[in-house]
Length: 261
Ligand code: PTJ
Image (cartoon, rainbow, N blue to C red; front, side, top):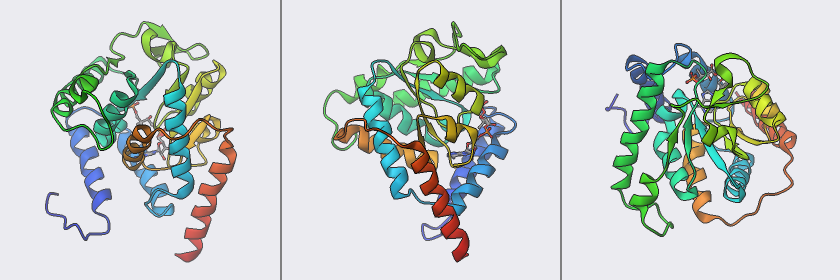
């Protein structure tokens, strides 16, 4: 996989696939992670495999809302950690907010693996130069990002069983939650609790995309890179957001791309 030339049009997609394959072998991911990834790939293909202008607006809105939040948290699942873990940690360091590992198919083994993977990534990232435009002590900003989730001492009201388990210090008390690749039920429950739910989902027709406060219709690794840039720039306040409008724009891109194939 290391030998794909830069000019290969599907290089990024092939590398992501390989990451998912390797992480599945290593026990980081749910059995259905590849199915979820494949569904995402199909939508990404229809969206032209690039971040649209409307997705950029959504990423800016998410940055503004996370910055304005009193108690923000970034909730991550297996696929997000594998595809965008590093930039998610960088964003959390800039925001000074915790990351919560909260997975749909919860097993102690996966929780442990994902948690220690993120802790190791933190150590590596703390040794890098600070991202462009960011000023301060990068090493301590990265190392102070709390990785929550192993202790399931919180509950999401309105959900039953293991899906209701969360961290009291993270999702339970948060006012604004960034949760890429979320499932519809949990998104709805969190919205019903009065929280702002900011999601990343390549499928503009999913229940999650429709239920969320702000939906970024984009691929998580591309979106996380831009989110880092916009979070550092910090040049916008939250707006009166029309989420249905942004979903319709994504559907229009799909329709337009479908006509030209
Ligand atoms: O790690 P766990 O146990 O929490 O499990 C994670 C998965 C993703 C397996 C689980 O949440 C799941 O089954 O998700 P769904 O219901 O299949 O939803 C995944 C959604 O994310 C779909 O709407 C996909 O289009 C979208 N998606 C998949 N890959 C990406 C994506 N969106 C953005 N970026 C991606 N790379």
